[in-house]
Amino acid sequence: MSKLLMFGLLAVIVYLILRGAGRRQRKPPPAPPTQKMVACEHCGVHLPESESLKSGEQHYCCEQHRGLGPLER
Ligand SMILES: [Zn+2]
Image (cartoon, rainbow, N blue to C red; front, side, top):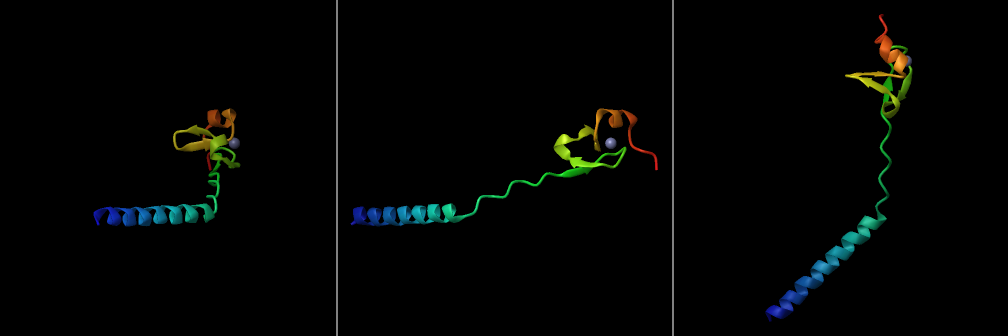
């Protein structure tokens, strides 16, 4: 009797796994993460964060602007 119960439980587990796998396949692939845009502290040009030069919390478009620092307003 316990063997039959175990088999039944196993069948339910297999069914749930297969159903879960099927659901996962139908799910669309996640969208690629959107590139975060930052503005140069000196000239204000917008560029992707990965391409910017960081100086603490500030971002710059090029080495020259990083050397010049934030533009006085
Ligand atoms: Zn700049």
